[in-house]
Amino acid sequence: MDKKNALRAGTLGAGTTLMMLLMSSPALALIRDDGDDPGPGLSVVQTLGLYVLLPLILFGVIAGLVMVLSPNKNKTPSSNINVKPDAQAKV
Image (cartoon, rainbow, N blue to C red):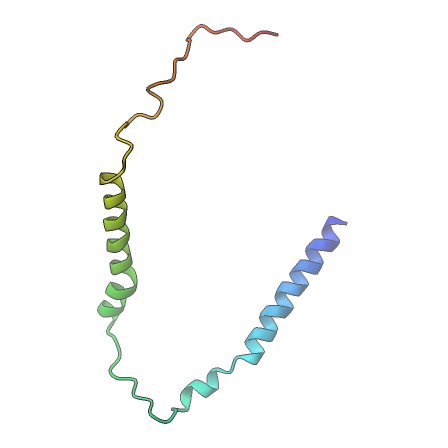
């Protein structure tokens, strides 16, 4: 029964993907619309900076702000837990 459901899900996923690929038409992207003014393209360095470096820098800034402004100043979360080293399990 499990293989049947997996086969059904795989078929549905593949069929949906195929229909989406067939219904999208990238050939229409070559035809310009009225008023279309795309402007100059980006270089490789500009593309990497915009889509790779800028998100990493923003992530670092946000993570740094969260760590600095965090109300929890306790650096070791397990400092208030008392553990007995010679505890025996009862059977």
